[in-house]
Length: 106
Length: 121
Image 1 (tube, rainbow over the protein chains, first blue to last red):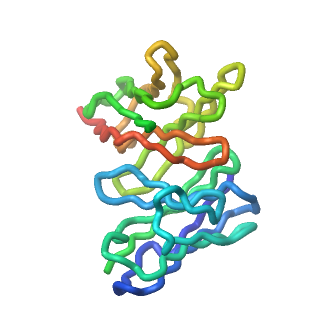
Image 2 (image 1 turned 120 degrees about the vertical axis):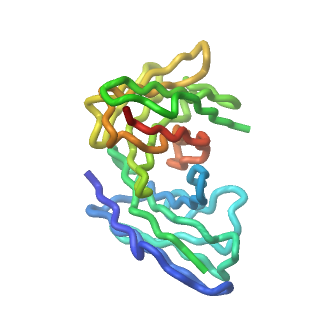
């Protein structure tokens, strides 16, 4: 099974900052890496799929990159509405697995 | 516009069976370009994939996670919904349960609103 280790578990940043969240997989895979944003009481919302493709309607300040075992989500020019918890997820091989989440605070 | 509307009990007693439904609108449960997943989120916030089903000339069902031996995923094409049963629940099954659509390019683009379930006597 592929394990996803996400870091940091939480971070505090200022409005306008650039924020980077990383996920490391326990084995190499390609393609099926998703990033989600979740706000309290809501379902996860897809931000990025296939490592780096922005989902429809997601602001361009969000970006994804990586390959092999190391992947990252970058938020440029952090905005107040970006306060949330972010999860990575591998959809490459069942059982599909999620990172532990990163809580982003201002 | 695809919408997933979940329903089910919010309180279940230990040893009982939890039954949840995810009603699909704007797509078909038997679509040959989508898969339908169940995920749960523990009170501490971690997400656990439970299983998926999809139709590609025949039905495929896969289970995962720590509780896969107690899970049953099913579909009803006449009602256009999918269901999840978790048998012999314990307090450790207390979680928010989500259904989610997965497209063939791997994007998990539509989610149900979540059903918070508490297992308690």
